[in-house]
Length: 191
Image (cartoon, rainbow, N blue to C red; front, side, top):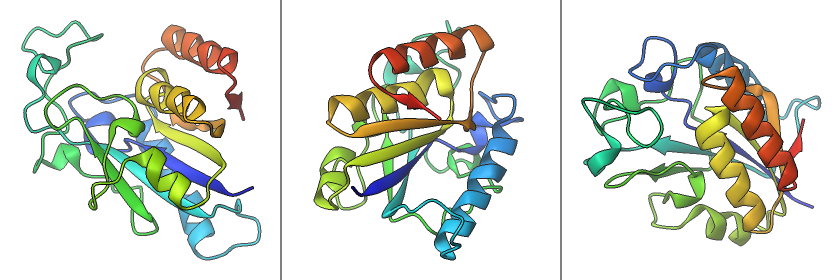
């Protein structure tokens, strides 16, 4: 068994003060940053991850995913625009330990990290399989959107999947509870 950590979209625009800020996003960024710090410094109390990767929304021109009159379901205010501060990792998160970063959503809506590509062009599933990964832990923002989509795709791609609920922030309690139930039903462990 080889386990990977997948950190989903811990970016400025998804934390408080961002164009799509989620309450608790900055705190989640801090806690994930602490976990990464302990893991990268080989702290014996840290989880035994073989690799740690991140996903980032990375919008150039995502079409009707951006709207001046968003429905907050399929259309959203502009966010994570390439070259903007909103696209950057939140400063509470230290991105240095990541083995790869997968960018998603350049020209279309993208929720799952499995839609992203690394700098070498590889897709997340292929990259993980190439590193012998069998199990993944997923955390980040937002529980009810991109974390949900990433965890469900992880299961579809054959990875044993766990969502680290205390290292996630959701948009709203109702949609977060619904997403957690859907993930559990699909075989995701909530831990």
